[in-house]
Image (cartoon, rainbow, N blue to C red; front, side, top):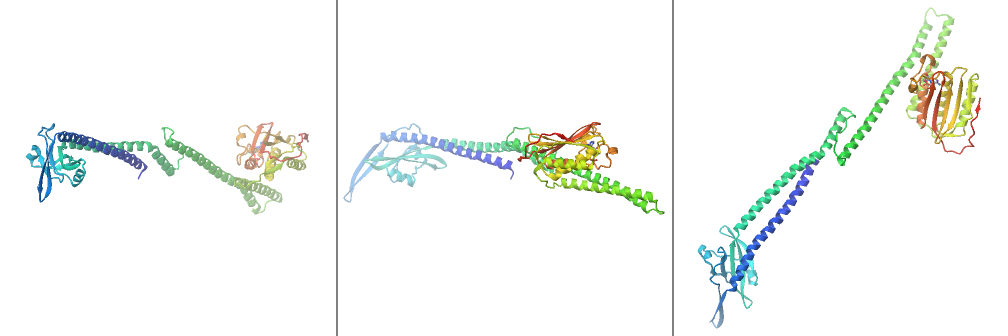
Length: 487
Ligand code: ADP
C-alpha cells in the first residue's frame, strides 16, 4: 500500500471516528432531551390528576377475615392535551379505569415486569412501547395510601413526532458524516499527492540516472525548505558530488588512456631506430667497419634512452599506484650539502651556488625528496648554458619550508608554463635533447604524495626557479644557521 493511500486512509478514519463519536453523542443527548420533555409533561399531568383523586375504601369480612378494597377515582377532567391516554391499574397491573380515548380503541396500557417491580417499590417508571405500530411513552406513577401501594396511574402519549424528528436527525448525521468523510478522503488524496509529488520526482530522477548514467540531471523543486525540500536539496547535492566524482573518474581514465598511448609512442621511437640498425648490421655485403661502429653507438644510445624511459615510467606508475611514502622528519641541510657536493664533483666546470641550507626539517620521504631535487637540478643543468649559474636555496615559512632550484638558463615560454608538469610534455622538443617529458610529472606526483606543492616561475632568456614547499617538521634541531652563499 502506498504512503499516499496510507496517509489518506489514516486521516479519513480519524475524521470518521470523530464524526461518529460526535453524531452519537448529539443524537443521544437530543433523544434524552425530547423524551425527557414528554416524560416531564406526563409526570406533571399525573401529579395534577392525583391532586384531585378520590380514594374510596370499602371494608368487608369474609370467612372471619377483614378485607379492604380501595378504589381510585380520578376527577372527570379534560386534559390539557387530549392525546394523553390515562388508565389506573391495580398493583398487579390490572386496569381499573380508562379514559375514553383508550376505551374507544379497546387498548390497555401495558406495564413491563421491571416496571411492575419498580412501582411496587413505590417509585415512578416510564418506558416507550410500540402499540399497534405507534410509539408511546408510558409513564406509571404509584398511588400510595399509608405508605402502601394501592395501585398506579398510567399516562401515555404518542412520541411518533419526536421519533420522526430523531429519525430525520439520524439520517442527516449519517449522510453528513459519510459525505464529510468521503470529501476528506478526496481532498486528503489530492493533498497527499501534492505533498509527495517531489518524492515521486526524486524517484523518477534516480531511475532515469540509473538508466542513462546522466548525473547532470537535478530534481526540479520550487517549494519551501521543509522535510521534502531538504530531501530534494540533499538529493541534488548528492547528484552534484556524484557528477564531480564521475567527471574526475572520466578525466582520470582519459589521462590514463593518453598516458598509455604516449608511453607506447615514446617506446616505439627507440625501438624503430634499433630495428632499423639491426637491419643495417645484417645487410649483405656487410657495411663498412666505421658505419658498423656508428650504428652500434646509435643502438647503445637508443637502448640507454629506452631504459631511462622505462625507469621513469616505472617510477611514475609506482607513484600513481599510491606506494606509501614515508612521513618522517627529513633534515634539509645534510640533504642539500650532499647534493651540492656530488654536483660539483660531476660538473666541475659549472657554477653551482648552494646557499648555506637552514637547519630545518620537513615532513616527508627522504628518498622521494632527493629524487625530486635531482630531477630539478638535472633540468637546470640541461637548460642552462655552461656559463650560467645554478642556485639551490632554502627558506623557512611559518608552517612549511621552501626549497628552490634556480637557474639562469633559457627559461620557459609563458604559454608552455601551465603544461610543464604534464606527462610527456616538452616545451621545446628541439632543444630538450632526448628528455622524456616525465621528469616534472614525477616530481609533482612525489611532492603531492608528501602533502607538498611544487611551482615554477620563469622568464624566457632569463632563467627559471622551481620551488618545492613541504610541511615543516616539529623537531628540535641545532640552532638555525644564517644562510651565506658558498660557491
Ligand atoms: P624532460 O625529461 O624533457 O626534461 P621534464 O618533465 O623534466 O621533462 O620537463 C618538461 C619540459 O619543461 C622540458 O622539456 C623543458 O622544456 C621544460 N623545462 C623543465 N625544466 C626547465 C628549466 N629549468 N629551464 C627551462 N625549461 C625547463
